[in-house]
Length: 442
Image (cartoon, rainbow, N blue to C red; front, top):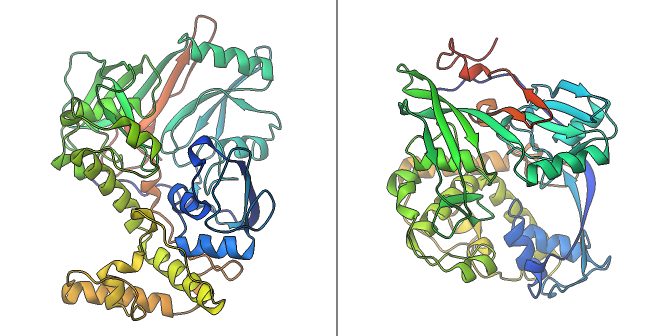
């Protein structure tokens, strides 16, 4: 299915930023370097070791050792040159305002997270409402996934935020979404009450599983398009679990076609329906960050999704590892080894060896053939071509822009209502009757 490219991207100039956070419970008794490599996978082990060595990353505002064991009460700070990913140029729009109730209802475009997290700081809904829409005081009470668009019921007073938050918590808010799914969805209403389990925090994967939390989503088909073999479906999530609509639609056999998680090719090998009664080891999987669940099928799905994400950044990670390994060697510092998949060298991949990695780095692997070797050498040539592949100020490897069509999925929050108030958005362009494959809204 071809997707519309959409509008151009919104970029934010890089800026220096200090992250500061208290030690989380799951970090207790873990070594600093291991925790950074496992929890924050956008940079390599070599970079984090360099950051600790130079004092960019500190514990309790002091330089420390990469093997320092974190404990309750520790405060970690990390000074970074923040390069935010680009987002859509579709604006955040105010749809409704009720000064008396303290309600501010906005439409969030896909690609924009609600709150600052990870690499996102200014490219967030909160920041854009405050600075683009000149609303200095804003509170959010519900969240949408970064790739999901639609209504957000915000508040301009703390009292209103507390009241709306209580209504969401008590299940008093009736919610409606619309999505486009693969295949001819049944005409009759479907009430899916399968439990959902959050199986991996890093990959963001959720499954229908008997150990999961109680969930309920009611689906009703609006239309079917035979040309694209897709259906527009009205969704009423009775509960509010993470990725609930996406997981239930996938479980029923009708995933959202441009969903990078739940329409990943790995699900063809391991259908979503096969996991419900599989045995896993919850104590192990919940306590070991990035660890295995103890089930081959579940671990295979998680590994495939992580590999998909990492492979898009392979050459950037290779450049990161090459640069900071070199800087550490110049300082006479040996890089500390970190156990597990997250601590492995990206240069173990054969394409990096064929591209001319330093002798002794990497463990080899299967031959890639002439085509693979040519691609590897092309990537190496791009690295050797000059400073364009790095930020000149912080030396972070620069990533190419994503395609605009990769920044959203066919899922839109359409309506929120209680017995006291009701707010509804119009249908997104991809859910309208005159929608055609590959044609964006004009």
